[in-house]
Length: 510
Image (cartoon, rainbow, N blue to C red; front, top):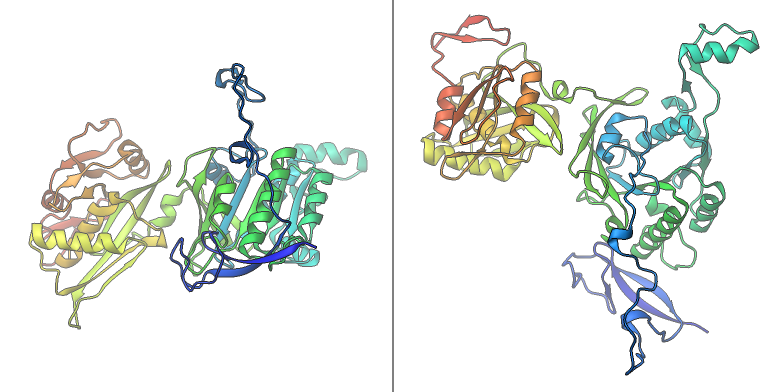
């Protein structure tokens, strides 16, 4: 009879311990150890370099490879990619879906993970013969109800194709532009891992979606679904089948209250790509961000908008994150933020007001709180603006998270403009990092940022000096070395007149 033993596994890092501790000895996380009962069949012999018994041979022949090959003998073949039907998703994945890859998607509850994958499965089912959607959280009827709201099962076709298809049936081809024939989308409502694996090996779909990994159950293990051992073993079994059969897997992962994907960290190491679906539940836009990608660039983002019929792509994200600019308001500045290879123009808003408390308040929305504290200290020490007794609030329009140092200059100008109750020319963009000595430093991908600003009709750009910038963009490029120089250029004396967004002069009282 097999003996059982009890171990305690951390649900954050996956470390094992023979006894329970209030804090994990490996990652110092409190209350993360869970009791797991394992079956033990006695001692076993390890192979390879960990073998318990190593033969000692005196006469050894010359080393020869058994199954390994030289690196130069491997043929260089271009990896084909599948179009998902959404350019934003293809951008985040690095140009399309790689066959046989594992993609992990995490996000807050209700953010739209299942909606995105169900719409993607519908687009893939139009062009591929077998697409499988495994629903471990909903029944087939519930998936069908949600799919009818999203329009899943409706195939869009061109008018010429409709004329060709309906000529033999006596229908007029120009009456409709939709074909309600069922796409090649299969649904499996199951939580048993073994049943799912058998279905994958039998159906052999091109793409399979697992929603979600925390609800799958492997009957061999005694732990509950969602535990460390269950998540690890289920993901490992799915990975082996996907690599062997060439099936692309999209795996949905729940997140913890800290925003990280629930389960052991080995889950993110097993998969090829890790995506996070982010967004404010009170806002309509959603951000799909890549934090790991073996087949493309990391920190790439795709932008979607939640509408009544599901998720739509945002073709021009810069317009989404630029607030209404019909009226000029003090304390606003425009920056160009880079996320991966995409540049997005964002408007920063600042408000400086006298404090009513002993300690002034500092609040941020979409920008780094520590960067705000640092910029306030630089402005007071190097520029001489008394901000230590004033409340300061900074936010990015649209709620886009801007954490890169290139937003420092725009944040500083917005704060100074709010303090002096002045407006910044809305046709000016500010790009640069601010050092502790008050200097403006260079940032990466400057040419891409300037091209994005010129494409949207901006006329001036205040950038760090020390680099040669292209002159054929139609931008007036102003180079500065100190933050005080940028303040003089961005916020001139506006006692006489100012310029609105259309270029007309407006009189402003002192």
